[in-house]
Amino acid sequence: MREDELATRVVDHYAAARDDPEVRLEEPYDADGRRGVVDAYVRLRTPERVDHVIELKADAAVRRATGANEVLRQYRRMERYFHADDRHALRPKLGRTEPGARYLLLFAPTPTCVHHVATHRSLYGSVDVAARVEDVPAVRTVAFLTGLDGDPADLGMASVNGDAPFGSEAFLDAVPPESRLAESLRGVDDDLVEFP
Image (cartoon, rainbow, N blue to C red; front, side, top):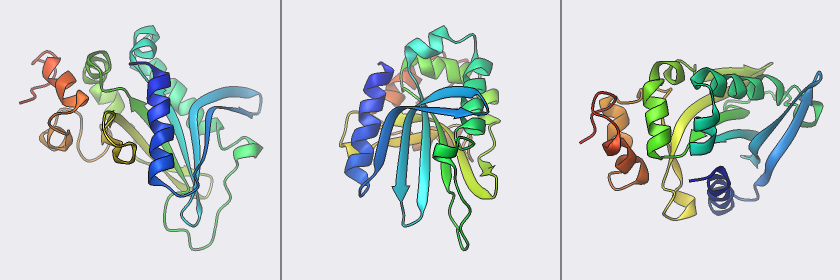
């Protein structure tokens, strides 16, 4: 599975599940001379603006990376500098109760990605969910994509950095039984994860 396939499913999901999303792929940012590109940038109105800043990882990216530290360094760089760019700046709003930004690191549900995350589960699991963009609350999510083969509106995630750590009973219960993720989990060495 390639990242462009993941990006296509993400775009299709937001088009099917949300009213009037503003979706941009390969969105550049530049803050204080620190340039980068995020795989997908989605701006929603709920009715307040909520940004979804998405980094996608498929097999090729995982194989090229020197390890989880490199993947997380890229993710943290995105988080640190994306909204620091004036073109993407978030402004606080009185009465905001929901996060203004969601930073997503999403892995393909392939054996290669599952093995990578399983091997480095403590690093990915240590990513704190709560974040801030100056005075605006934000959320960090590290997850596998689920529902890639179904209706685009049903695209989902199985988070590894929330209340259900990778490999835990709660995480495994959240995995759709006949999904690509379930199949990949079954194929991983039992020493890394036991999946029924």
